[in-house]
Amino acid sequence: MAMINCSKCKEEVSDKAYKCPKCGQQLRMSILLKVILCTVATIVAGLTLVAYTVPSVTLPETKPEVSSTPGAQIPPSVLVPSVQTPSVQIPRSPNHQNKDGTTAFAL
Image 1 (tube, rainbow, N blue to C red):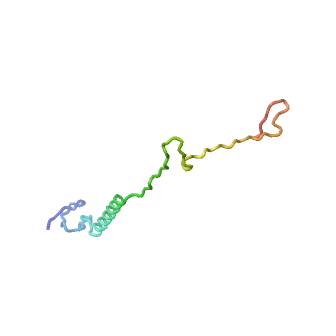
Image 2: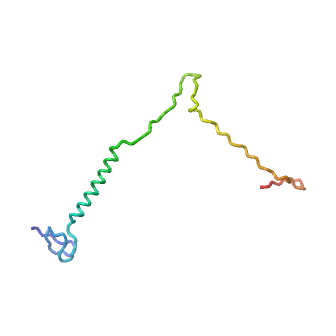
Image 3: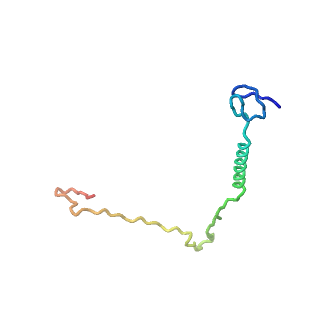
């Protein structure tokens, strides 16, 4: 049986001990903690492996077929409709002209 020194109180302790009998400092990792750490590491490694081996789902890119011959008809799905902006008219007040001849706008 080998002896080691406690890191806290420097007392000689057996290398098989989990805690120092003098100060209570933990010397070794408990078996339960080792099992928990190994389980978590296995799960993380498994999820990483699955993430890199499962093919990602991508939709195929579809392009409309357009003929390169002159005068060919372009399918309606390719044409983009033109957008027209509506014209806005600002209403004027019925009394938009002052007595002195200046114009006033009602907001």
